[in-house]
Length: 160
Image 1 (spheres, helix red, strand yellow):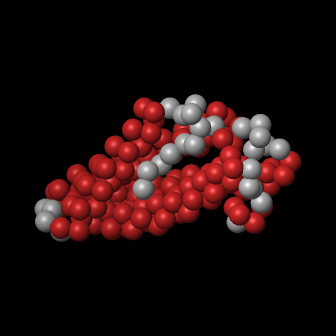
Image 2 (image 1 turned 180 degrees about the horizontal axis):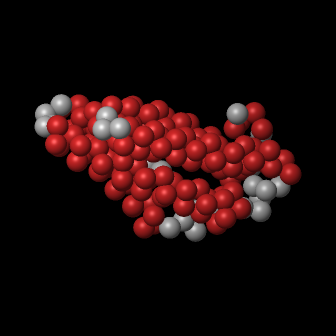
C-alpha cells in the first residue's frame, strides 16, 4: 500500500519519507515476529519503534494538510456544491485517522514508560496494522471520488 496524494502539487520528498517510515515499521514487525530479541534488544527496538511511529504521525499530518490546502481537497471542481458533503467527509476522515495514529503513539509511550516493551511492540504493530487498513479504505474512497469527478460520472452513492 502506498500513501499517495492525488494532486500534481504534492511533495515527492514527503511521499518518499512516508515510504521509508513504512519500511522501518515492516522491519520492526519482522523482528517481533521472529522473537529472537534479547530483553535489551526489545527495549532498544521498542524505543525505535515508538520514535518511528511519532515520525509517521507527523508526516501523516503533513500529508493531510497538503491534500487539504494544496491537493484535491482544495480543487475548485470538487468544491462545487454537489461534492461538498463528500469532501467534508474526507476531511473528517483525515482528522479521525490522525487521531487514531496519535492514540497509538500515546498508548505506546505509556507502555514504554512502564517498562512494558514486549507489549509495546506487539500492541503497536497490531494497532498499526488496523490503522493501515483504515488508511487503505480512506484512499479507496478518495480514488473513487477523484476518478468519478475526472470522468464526469460522480454521484454521491459512488463514494459511500
